[in-house]
Length: 426
Image (spheres, one colour):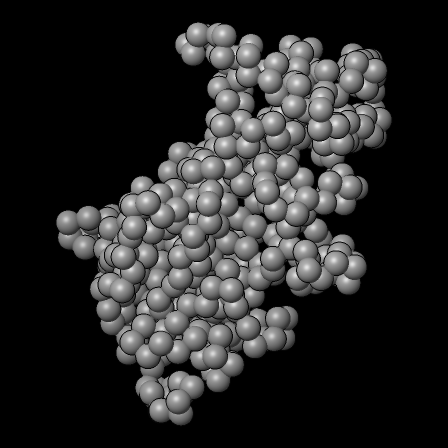
């Protein structure tokens, strides 16, 4: 027999817990403008009431039950969070035991024109301390692991450069070295040359990063101007990629110390489908491109540069692990999960969420397998027919839908085009 559930008005409705939701778009200054924003174009495809203004920056499409950007059920307008409270069966027993009667993750599409802040997210214990001490800037006590999956060419900073790479940057980028100070730079170079143990290199790396982030304003201004003068005096075809990136960052954040972080943090270039998993205490910043992001339900961000928002430099410096690795080592690998090869899973090492990508060729069909917890899915490209026991609808690009725990969904790509579907679940 079919399950019967109620919406908030008390009307009885027969359904299998698979339904379309309408999702809000966040307008932050760093977002891409108008129809160049994938977040905006996806929203416009599925929500006829959303009209794109070409002069407006559209930064993030939020798909979930976050109080600052609540999804609603298409047709009824019922808030997803309210429906889940009335229908906790849709979350599954495991999710309810771990997280209560709420969706534990938020799925997003980000369209980044201007770099996001140099930041890290605290682990759970530190989040509790920060929230207790400063609830205004740390509004909850939860951790905030994130998964970032490129859906266009995407550039980000993530983690620290290897000791050898950083030593090279200190030697060759004179403005960067002067900000660090010759004594600190020479001490780090000496340890690298001597093959010092990892513990000593880690402490020295912290000293270098601290010297950069705590540099006085006059020194930062001076070295930014020196860098600008030198790089702008070089023919564009002869600039290094990092020099060009410095100009890109400085155009949006003039005289910001974060512009120099490209010389100490890895710059990671990602192709569509490649991912970064950003665990606790990992320094990072998105630079440009479009991505799918999934995160735990938290707003805790410790920032230190490339932002007009509150900066908490001392907490950032103390919380980082100072693990160094080459840029390709920061990429998070997915794994195939079905025999036909259509679905790959980003199996994140947290209870809060996992993400799958299903790439269905034109005219082919597959299943989004039943899982123990709730899911939020959306169509990134193409179109597909979606069918569960009772629910049936055509999902074009931008269509977002909820799937209750324990529910299998069949999807068939249109005959003319394939379809790419992302799904977050726990």
